[in-house]
Length: 150
Image 1 (spheres, rainbow, N blue to C red):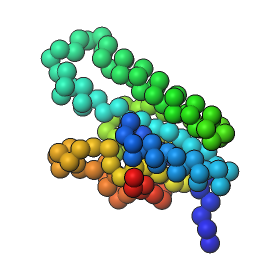
Image 2 (image 1 turned 180 degrees about the vertical axis):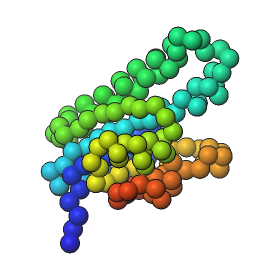
Image 3 (image 1 turned 90 degrees about the horizontal axis):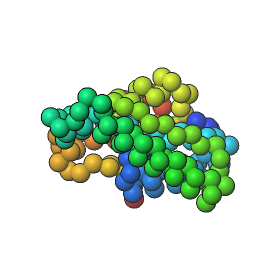
């Protein structure tokens, strides 16, 4: 029996791998008359490490980063609509740990059947220190996960 995936989550991080995964997810969604939820998780730990003492209380750095992410997500959505003639796309930006938000939190809020994600968006040092988000999601998510290798 073939699984019909109708609610597909695609986490994106700006990497070519994640955008390749998005392309594949569009094809899966089209075949199954489904929809796509594009998600970017803003890891605020990066702000405290990188900007620690120089960030003011107003949160301007976080606000401008959120706006840039929102713009990026909307460009991805427009590209899908224009190039693939597929309009069943929603975009989401969330704050938190990418691994926890993707594998747990987002799945509690939306009825996701499938996660389609790129192999990795982090560099080798990040994977060694904090582990691969992709690895965590494949082990922890309550739905099927497809990993796209570029």
